[in-house]
Length: 338
Image (cartoon, rainbow, N blue to C red):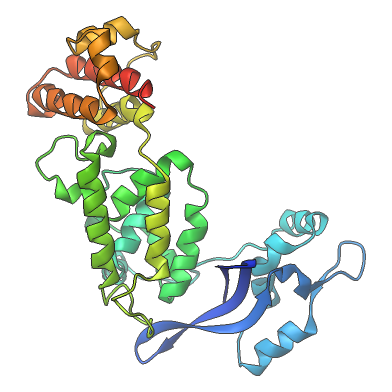
């Protein structure tokens, strides 16, 4: 069972749902409509005690649902009164194992992992590791993917949505860039894992192209019987909203380059932190005067940086110190274009 939060014109609405196997596919079904406040189904007899409304349990029994008190405790924990929730958490309540059964050998785990949708794997990898350059995920067993097993598409989306709500605003765009594998559209660009440096209009177009492709992906919608590929599904609509409500954090270009540089060269020692580059120094790096930079649009500055970066990037034989200095200058000047 899981709690599904949906949005209506009156605000958030909660449904108690269950994933079940039907005709070879995992599907979901509604068990109980919990309304706007699932906490209304929790009764408090006094002190730190609590129990669940008999109506809730009767409806679950009537539908043949197998569950334990610990299952309900974990689902309703966020809606308990604060002082009761603290006691429950203190004694280890509310903790559920998302995958408690034995998964077998590495070979068996690889087989199970291989049937997971690639979109789900990329999303979970970024949420777990926070990296745009995720490489190939089919080369090893990733135990954090175990939470995806034996779940309907709706339950998977519910799980991932709850994780996405923990992402800082600055990571929304890089997360979506990675989840939809937009770097694959720039295979020969040495900066393909630094989305803030890429042509923004092209990235936007590729994102919409991938959204439409995913909307037609039968494998992704397996178990969903009412999806019409002519209309964008709410699972994907939310990503369009998230994408265009946020932007790439161009202030992090320096940190992102250093992280990627260290990852590729394990023995590299990171440089000590330094103050932001002075304006005049930044102008000289780009061989421009202050007035020219002031009149440039943000897009023009990005294009200039991308062109210079390709020429001096270390991966194409350039000098890494010069590339670092160029990136610092770019980040400094771009910040003034906001």
